[in-house]
Length: 66
Image (tube, rainbow, N blue to C red; front, side):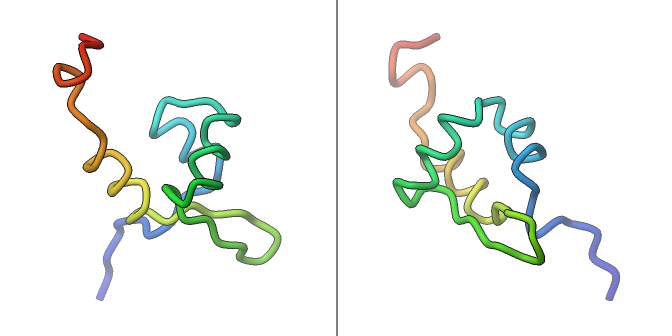
């Protein structure tokens, strides 16, 4: 089975994908909203947690930030 979907992202990849800064990223991780794993010497964010973060965030029109 050759599934090319990533299951985890390095911190720089996750920052780029989310469009947020490192400080906010680690704040969200400390709040348990982003799941981080250590593999080898690298810190990886699970793809599931990044998708969940976006899917559970309110729509911009709901917050008045449009």
